[in-house]
Image (tube, rainbow, N blue to C red; front, side, top):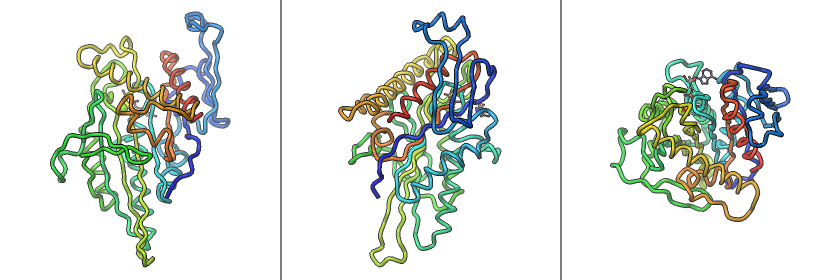
Length: 337
Ligand SMILES: Nc1ncnc2c1ncn2[C@@H]1O[C@H](COP(=O)(O)OP(=O)(O)OP(=O)(O)O)[C@@H](O)[C@H]1O
Ligand SMILES: [Mg+2]
């Protein structure tokens, strides 16, 4: 089914707020207000400006549960996918702000599970309620590490390892050589998600002791075959979860050696993502998707027919006000796409 393009949906999630004088999270009006303290305001080159207010589709404070985030933002995307649309959920934000917590959450505490495991449960409970359709699901899990594509599922049974490459197909981009594992039920899909999760590149730095060092892309591909229509009509849809590595300031994370090299790749690809979002928002002309693997892969999510939800995670701590403003500005630009 061909989707009708609608604006990208943007949700902001604050991990916790340390000082309401400077950061005000207002879920009722879906707004976030930031007021700089005088010492930061005078240090900015645009020191005319010391306060901002942005409006999004959803705004969540630190008290919002994993369940609430899923029900109000991701569940509608899953439901669209179950109707035959492609859907993408992107977690974006500063290092340590809660992207992986939002995406995967806890692998041991059920109530703390993130949006990807909850989406898996929703897909299979829908399949069970629709006996007139045969639902076939495959899962794949990819990491973009230092601008290289890595299959996180190579230890699972399937065809042998092959070098991965991006291939353009109509409006979307697929990854040639990536393992797609057939998953018959929720437990099998969770097993694939957690297997890939354990294989992701993570490191410890000053702001996060399990910091993601690559962008992770978990995809559920679905096929719905009618058991009642004689034509055996087939609908295909894809649900993609992207847990981005966090933007970071080397001074704050105190990274050095190979971690520093990773940071350069992470920051560069996020800059490209921002450029692509700006280009997609302002023009119908050329959008430089091919500038990095991340943006090439996200072509459909940003400028194609995918139902896309961006969850912008922010720390909410006064010590990270500048990064928070950068995250909120990116989220506002994305909302214009
Ligand atoms: N809303 C939240 N409630 C409780 N704990 C949280 C929340 N958000 C994040 N955390 C915890 O904060 C820590 C850092 O979060 P997380 O690893 O998700 O950050 P991240 O944005 O993925 O960072 P990075 O870019 O470095 O990968 C983790 O221990 C996580 O469990
Ligand atoms: Mg992370």
